[in-house]
Structures are given as C-alpha cells and as structure tokens.
Amino acid sequence: MILSIIVLFLSIFVMIIYIIITILNDKITIQEKNIQKILKQRSDLIPSLYEISRKHINKHKEVFNELISLRKIQFSLNEFEVSFIEFIKNEISLNHEIRFIYNICINNKELQNDKDFLYIKKLVIEKNKLIWQNIENYKKNIKFVNNLVKIKNYTILWLFIPSQKRLEFNLLKNIF
Image (cartoon, rainbow, N blue to C red; front, side, top):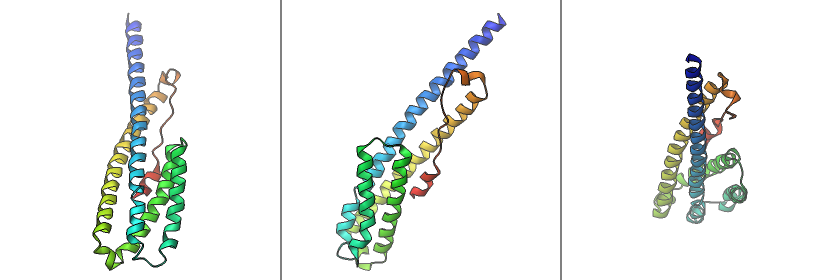
C-alpha cells in the first residue's frame, strides 16, 4: 500500500516536472523569436539613420560600411534557420556599430536639431527598452528551467526525462 502511494506520487511528480519543462522550453523558444523580431525591427531603422545623417557626417560612407556588412550578415541569418546564439552574436556587433553612429551623431549639433534624427533616435530607444524587457523575461525562464533540470538530474527523474540544461547567454548582456 505505502509502496504504491510512493510510486504514484513519484509518477505524478515526474509528469509535472516533464510538463513544466516542456512548456517552458516552448515559451523560451517563442521568446527567442520575439527578441529576434524586435532586433530586426530596430535594425530596419538603420537605412533611415543612414539617410538622415548622410549630409551631416564627414566620411559618411566609411562610417556606415561596417554597419552595412553586418546588416548583410543579418539578412543571410534570417534566410537560414540559425541558432539564437548565432543571431545574437551578429546583433551585438550591429549594436556596437549603431552606438558608434549615435556617438558621432550626438556630437553633430545640426543633427541634434533635426526632427527626423530625433524621431529615429526615439524609435531606437523604444526598441531597446522592449528588447531589454524581453531579455529579462527570457533570462528568468531559463533560470527556472535550469533549476528544474537540476532537480531532475539529482533525482531518478533523469532516467525518464531527457532534457538538457538551457544556457543563459552572457552575450545578451552585451546588446546594450
């Protein structure tokens, strides 16, 4: 009698852990796609930034060449199903270039009075805030899944539930 209750309890425990890990893994995958989508939207603002700053920045083409090559890589990554980490690595480089462009633009007094530039700047800042919020939720979910995986690995559950630990990418901290 007691043995059957213990077996029943363990079975229910295994099922609950399995269901939670499965649901969270699906949720994390959806969050990765959302983060990618918002990063792409932010990158879509680059041509506008390019056009607005063209008449105000010396050596404009040289400044934007790296940005254009990173944007091409982003387009190629979009065509192929690449891992989230590969996508993020390119986005980090792209983000550094965008920040560099903004630093140049901020030092230009004419651009600081340009309504179009200020509007694009505002849009990029809004996208960055949205990206940051999504990344924070993403990291919380990864941490929770990893804790469940630890529980699973320290019990007999590892025989029944084959799931791997999700990594929290330190690269995400470099996006901003």
